[in-house]
Length: 488
Image (tube, rainbow, N blue to C red; front, side, top):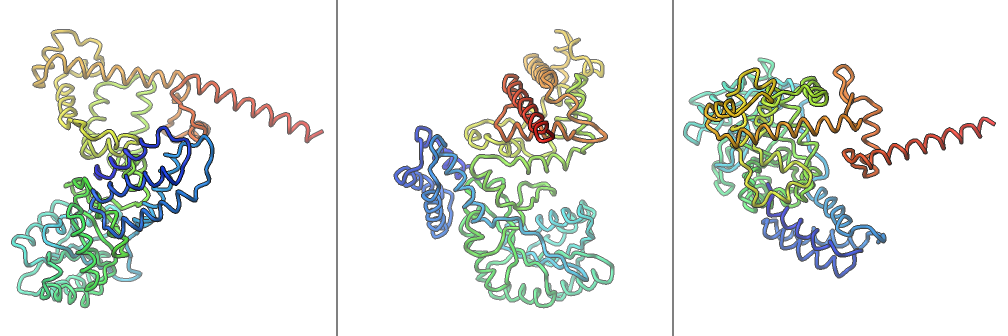
């Protein structure tokens, strides 16, 4: 996602490696690099110019502090401006105060509108809302059937009729929702070009009859400036309340995400990040800015993990790791969970520092499947006690999983290293007892980790940890002396 922009910004920050302060000259040089990155990403030209002007003004206004990395100062400026450009905060869906909330979905043909209707319905269903999908796309062959199949797979009711025009059908669906207690109605209208006056009049008629609380335009992010132009044209006829960008996982440029808010004034509310029904995420401008700059999205990664791993299960697995009772069977469960979180490349891109290293990296999606196959080929005893795996057992496992003996050795080596790392962290006193099934994170440990992070202490560096704790002891003694003096 956004490889073009991320690469451009990473090149920019490397240019500042030898500089000691921000100057008008190196800022101007940096802006040339940013301009090139924006144009390659298909960002709207006027948006790019305005963005560069704001970055230049803010960067020149930064107080120059000796010894501060100018690249870091510029990252802060660009991150703030990127966030402001894309909307500052996430834009939640409007919810009706009484009666069903009506959401009208519009868009061009092929933007993924019907699939997105299913994704949005599933997301709202998880929020305990009773959703009714409405098959109002009577233009595309099998569109109604596609929505019916989606609804059946997701366990969501679908309203479909024959012999009625879409405006009449949608109005009848809203009445049904009101009568049957549905609190949300999603209208899947036909894909249409904004220059097709007859179809545009039809969707305007649907809006007039149903009085939707949300009018969302579904745009294919890979079309770049075409998505921005379509949004602008649709808004002139429909009064959009927001945009959903689809296929963002395949968009290497990112121009639409950066331009659409600035050009239309409409917020991006959701982004589609994969083909599966649960791959619709709330759009957070700040998190997206960090991802574009190659800083990852830790919060998003944690949220995605929480969707597939329960809190108690995560605590139990962590305790097993720290106590040394983590087995290959547990490791298999971990692999299954990671696989269900989405494409491995997307998960790695959400880790800080990884986005800039993704170019040219061969992320082998099949590696996880091979590891699963090897563990499945082991006996229960071998999974619990991998140290008993000798040459003959290794050969049998390799044959059973369709892999080689070297690959089996590699799996066992990775597993040993993981357990060894967890044990060393526990011995350092950093993670031992950190998780408690009944209490979650112990407050004292959590505070200690937060203070380390604030002071830039690496919790895995024994010397830094000792120095940090010695510093805390000196502070405690100093506070105790002050309290004694006050009492006197």
